[in-house]
Length: 80
Image 1 (cartoon, rainbow, N blue to C red):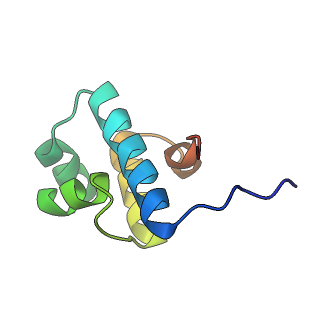
Image 2: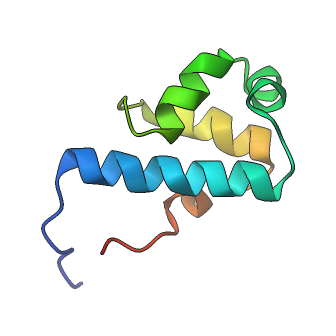
Image 3: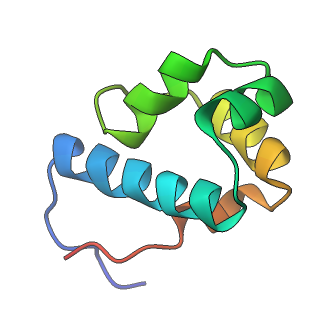
């Protein structure tokens, strides 16, 4: 398996958050709508999307359920 290019934790969180935001918008969901589906505070989702916080895998699972997709789809993005 090919090693990923060196990327900082901060950059990874920003790319992950941006992917989450794009996915949420594609599903035509607001922060509040996704928050209700996931039982996560909407401000927490905003901070995730901005790459401000690191999250647990259980949160990834809840976000995926709320977006009605497989958790691995939240990791489909390019690391430039």
